[in-house]
Image (cartoon, rainbow over all chains, first blue to last red; front, side, top):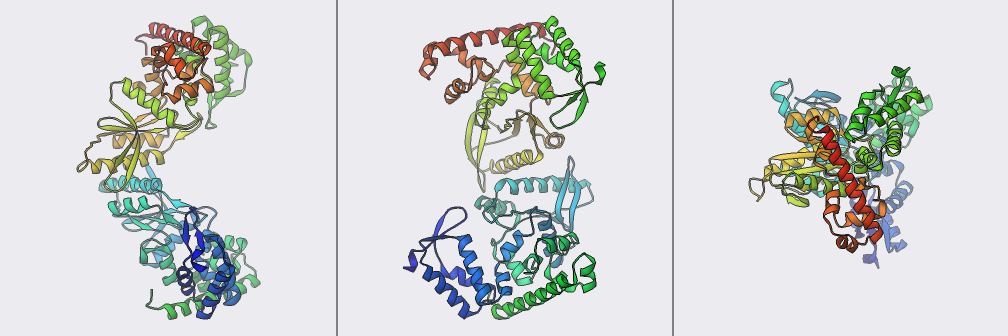
Length: 286
Length: 286
């Protein structure tokens, strides 16, 4: 009966349930072979006619937490952890800046540039590029052509002004935590824009970069609830590796209790360890 | 005490009440000197500390209706009549197309054009230009830079494709029934875009063109309520002159009763007559 099960995507489209997709995301999250098999069997046994991607995700997440451990479940929930960088888009911009910085670029956030006619506030600026960030706090929202074309017009306006201003822009990145519509991708390819979305473009995709380079957001840590996140993000501490590199005193000085610091510490170590294990297992296979 | 009165603009700014502005708009609507004086005196007597532009407009409108006649009051309410072309922006696009057609351009609405990468549906297309329409159903909303830059990016994308497609675009108009932000105007000037808004740019402004060329919308007619408007707009009859040029039979054939046709007819004649009188009085003064 397996082949009858359908998955309802966020845009309302139906597609056949594909266990391979579940297997892939579970392997990426370091879940063991035996747990994966148990999870597939559980889904099979439930004999759904159809299920939403959200519901399917929640079932799998709970099973990983129960059958494997909470750190692998956290890594499995990466996309949701990025959503929790909201509610507005500012923290996502800072987070994207950290990824570019981690990749060796000198970047600044929220920079004001004058073109020959107007003023632009840019989300993330590197030496010869800038990044426009489109954050959505729900997975169903696709970044549309209007956003991408507006960003492109800003790029052209600033590129035009490079001649007589003290800056130069050669590339435009548009980064989103969800996905781009097909016409965004067609438009971006034609005009040479760099598009970074959750899954698009293989090794340039946000999920791939975070997974492989361990740019894990602090919202991945089980001990980071709304309040702890608020204290961390106020100090622009957004990556798990940044938490790890702070001393207990530094963490206490931002308003965290000794108990919260201890929990953070344990969670950080465990996530980093889990990520290293995954890397070992999947190393070279991606 | 007169000079103390303040007007609260829709964006919340306060400015001194300026009777000259009221006089100008009343003269444009063909209101007689004696009525204008009575209106100014009535406002003076009310001794407001402050009043919103909306409230001030309503008071003046009611006074024109009472002291002068309902056709001058209609002409005075032109901006509101344009708003009533809503609730969505499609009728406004058709209306803008009629203005361009009236000015001698061959135009089509809702045309699909392929660029080298994506498909654009354009609101109004002429021989070598297209018009992007930004309709707002409330006077407080300003068309912002994002809309104008997106339109510009569309223009550049289509201009780029002119080389190998069977069309050519040399100009972009962006038309709105409210106003553009200052940065839209700066951007538009620098990049050579044609901006048409309610008041901006003298003889190119929407209000000036409508007033002087009598592109009065049918929503200006006292007898055109929601239902009559719906019947007329379904047949793309949007100008008062178009109603005038139809026979009674044609108007009945679209679903109007004999009584409604008679009222329409009277209203049309009276508005056109009032407009001609205004033209005579103000001729050459604008």
